[in-house]
Every structure is written in C-alpha cells, then in structure tokens.
Image 1: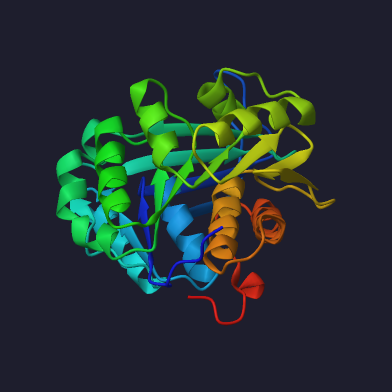
Image 2 (image 1 turned 180 degrees about the vertical axis):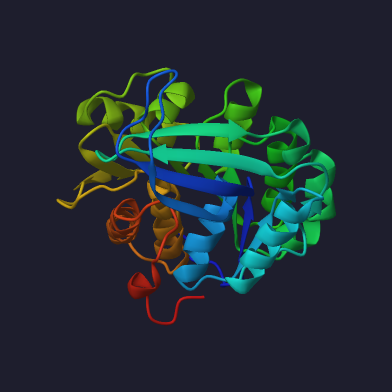
Length: 304
C-alpha cells in the first residue's frame, strides 16, 4: 500500500458525553440495582477514534459536533487536554449522551440520545475543508449523514488523501464511498449491511472481504463473531484470533482496532503487521470499563 508523506489524520464522527455504569445485574422492570462503578468522560465513536489515534502517536484533527452547552464545552476541553485538535468542531444544540450499562459478565446495554443537530452536515464539512485537505488520512464514521460523508470523501479525494471507512451505510452513498476508500473496517453486522452477506464464520468473512476489495478498497478488516478479525488485501489475508484475556466491556474495542490499523497503514507497515497492532489495541481496550483506550504502551517509536 502506498505510503504518503505524514501529516495528520482528520477524523469525522460523533462526539458525545459517555456515562458508564457498572452493575452486578441489570434490574427487571420496577426493580433497582446498585451501581458498582461510574465514569463520565469524553465519548462517541469519532472522539474514540481520535483519542486512540492520538495515543498511538498520530496528529489528529476531530471534525464533529459539540453541543452549545456545558457538556459540549467540557468534552472539547477534555479533547484538547488529550492532544486532539478541535478547531473544526461545530457548536450547536445539545451534546449527544451515551449511557453504557455493563453487568458483571461484561454484557452491555447502550442507551443513546443523539439529537439531529448533533450530527455533521455538509456545511460543517465544507467549513472544515482546510483540515481535510491538509490530512494524509481521513477517517469517516459511517453513522454520520450521507451528505456529510460524501462531501468529505470528495474533498479528501481531490487532496489525494487516504480514505478510511468505519461502520456501514446503505444506498447509493455506500457504493460511492467504497469506490473512493482505500481502507474499510466493519464488524460482522456492519459487513453484512455493506455486502448483503451474513457473517457467521471465517469463510463468510472471506467472501465478504473479497467482494469489498473488488469494489475499490485496498485493505479490508471484518470482525468474525466470537472468534477474531480478518484482515484481507488483494491476493492474501490474515486471521487474528481474539486474545485470551478477560473482557470487562466491549465498548470501544472496534474504535481502538481502527486506531491501530490506521497507525500501521500510515507507517507503511504490511497489512498483517498493521492488523496485529489493531488487535492489540482492541484487546487492551476491552479489558477496561467504558471504552476509554489506554494505548500509550503500544505506540510505535517515531509515530506521527
């Protein structure tokens, strides 16, 4: 895969406040349960991507929407403290809130309050065009509106930046984005939406990866339920089994995986080596409550 002159990574995605609650068990209707641990922190997939990338040594600019409220100001302040650029973040409305309830067995329930004005618009993207143009890599969280994603992909293509897709989107926008992208990461459910193929095992993941590669990307990562992650590129693939470690909370594992994968790709590593960094980042994150990565120990020397 071509190595571009290093600059920074532009991440387009969600910024939110995360409220994480650990309980022994989720109560039935009408019941209650004591909270064993509580965390309130910067969250949302876009912010998680940006934080993981920054911890692995990448310069990052986050393009997202923070509410015009105290929660939004706090989230942006926390991002800046973590070394993430937020000059292009829009401010309006109410900051998105994600409530992550995790039981003692590691199962989670996620409650999401994401107002419409907490999503990116094409106008937001155009106002951030200088940051996108200056990036060597642009990561697009596909849960954002299609108009914003397509606008960002167009700017990134003109700037000859590497485009990375995370998640799934349907319709005409899916086909356009896959044609423009160099890297795609999706869990099993997302890969099924992208390809129309159910991903129940490794063979199904290989078929889905082959289809995605035919549509434009150079590197594809697909989650195999309960087993691991498939990294596929033209002519070969590698399957990375889940590490044998205790899972505390699966929140943020995929976000950390993306951060590791992009870090390796930006350094010109082989797909398999990039995938191993991604798997290590995901494994480290799911051992923590709340999806907040702590990836500094995995940072490659000289990462930019």
